[in-house]
Image (cartoon, rainbow, N blue to C red; front, top):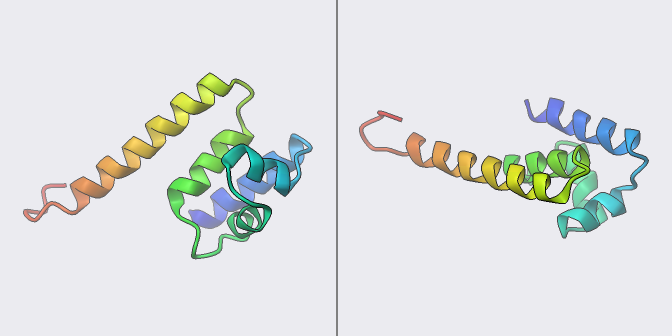
Length: 89
């Protein structure tokens, strides 16, 4: 799944004629981090990769912020449910 997301990020960035540095600026990150995202480097978290996808695929900043928050909250809720001791998550 991470490889698919990384490939999609690269496609979106290219289709919008954005450099890695421009995507990094949108994320508040740096170009080398975006390069690692596109390479599906193991040090890149899934939520950061999803945020980068949303950033690259959104023209509306308010929509982007809302979507990013929803994804981030959803990932945290999933992680919390997965760590329940009774296995009910």
